[in-house]
Length: 83
Image (cartoon, rainbow, N blue to C red; front, side):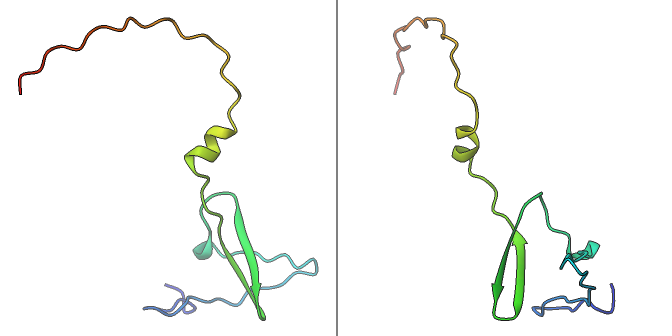
């Protein structure tokens, strides 16, 4: 564990270099999952967190329409059930 990592409920921190275009190299131990992130500013702090995953409904909404016809399904009577 690096000397910059803290245990318990305290936030881990690390000194990083700001480049002229304001890009920041994110250290490996702070990598975020996925390909998208949300950034916001709270006072002088920049907060970067993983973007929430799309819901199944949002993902399905991006799929193309399905134009194929379904074959007819025979509607058979239910088998008797002995309760």
